Length: 146
Image (tube, rainbow, N blue to C red; front, side, top):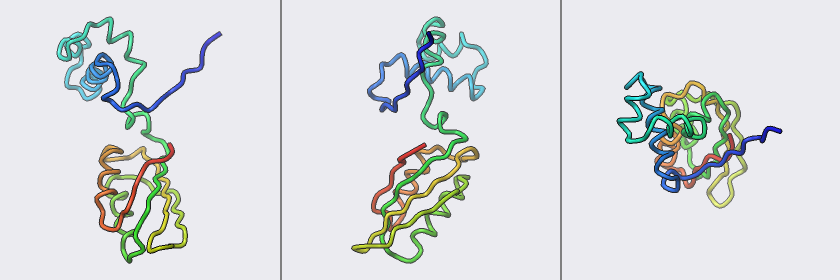
């Protein structure tokens, strides 16, 4: 009987070093930095057998979310132009907005959820979130579902 795989989101710093090295070797192969497994494994300092053992067990969060729908939960100040600025960031990163839901502002703030398709992103999800968080009028921003 085959076990159904379980997936977890784990901070990279908590992973054993071998997983990070396998992920780096995979990146080198995917980006064309090298086209040989032997070169990639040598560059990151792991054996080919370790690479083959773990290669299907690790993938960057961004890659897992490619082509998927991601939901962002945002707390915004009730100020003209804040939502418009955010939508411009989504557009600049190539996210396709599917839904926007905004609660009625209370206490000068409003909760907004934005669901976006991420298949055509021009930046990483982490970069998109950083840009959103850095926008004037954004109190809090997080990815809540994917």
